[in-house]
Structures are given as C-alpha cells and as structure tokens.
Amino acid sequence: MDVARNGRTDAARVSAANALLDRAYGKPAVKEEKEIVDLPPVVIQLTNDH
Image 1 (tube, rainbow, N blue to C red):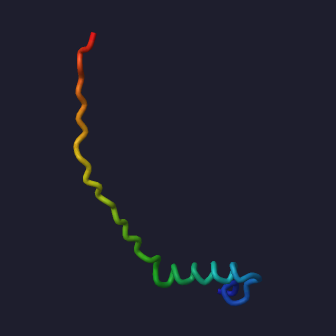
Image 2 (image 1 turned 120 degrees about the horizontal axis):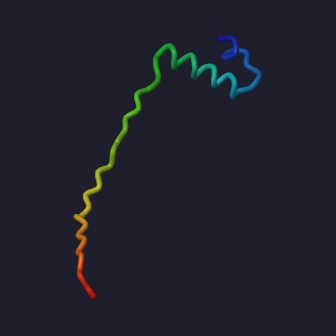
Image 3 (image 1 turned 180 degrees about the vertical axis):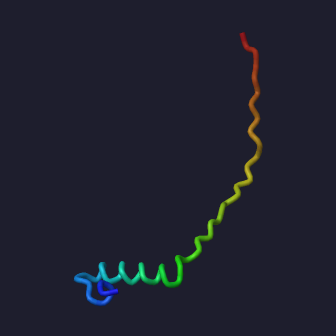
C-alpha cells in the first residue's frame, strides 16, 4: 500500500493501486464475444482430365 501512496513514479503508483483493487474487488469479468460468420459451403469438384 505504501507504493500506491508514495511511489517514485506515477506508473508505479497506478500499478500498485490496480493490484490492490484487483485483490480487494477481484478482476473484472472478461466477456468473450465470438463472432459467428455464416459462409456458404465450399464445394470441391474432382475431375479426371487426362
């Protein structure tokens, strides 16, 4: 907690504050959105060209 109040740099203070909040309240839930792409089927036509 000392670094959050008296850290040498702003970055150190912000990082320490974030760590404290993550421990106290838990990390925010990450909602994964999966994009569903509806593509037409692929047709493979085999030919016997000699």
